[in-house]
Length: 123
Image (cartoon, rainbow, N blue to C red; front, side):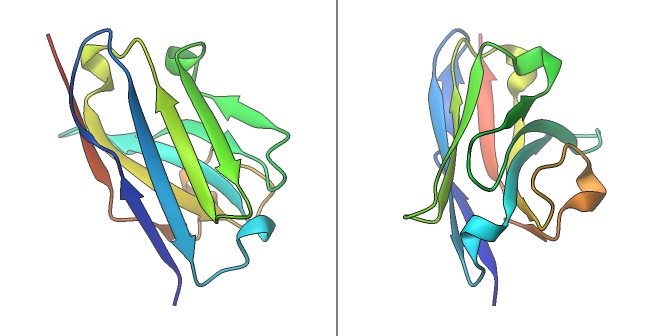
C-alpha cells in the first residue's frame, strides 16, 4: 500500500532553519506531483509548496516564498521542505501529499497523505 512518512519536525527558534523529509513507498514516485501542506490548530489545511514530477517546476504560497524550498529525489523516493528564516506563524503540522497531476496547490487534488510532522517555532 502507499505510504508517505514525514520526518524532521521539531522545535526551532524564530529565524532558524529546519529540513523536513518525506519518504514515499508503494507508488511510482516519479509519476506523482508532490506537495507540502500545513495545518495549524483550529485552521484548515493550507498549501505550502508543490513540485512537479520531474522536479523542474515548483510553486510556493506567497508567505513562504524566498524562505522555503521544496526539492525531490526521484532515485530515493523522497521530497524535502527546506525551511529557513522561520516565523512564529509557521508553527503547524506539516503534511506531505502525492497527486497524480503534475503539480497542484489544491488540497482536493491530492490522492495520498502522510501522517504529518509537527513544527513549532519559538520566540
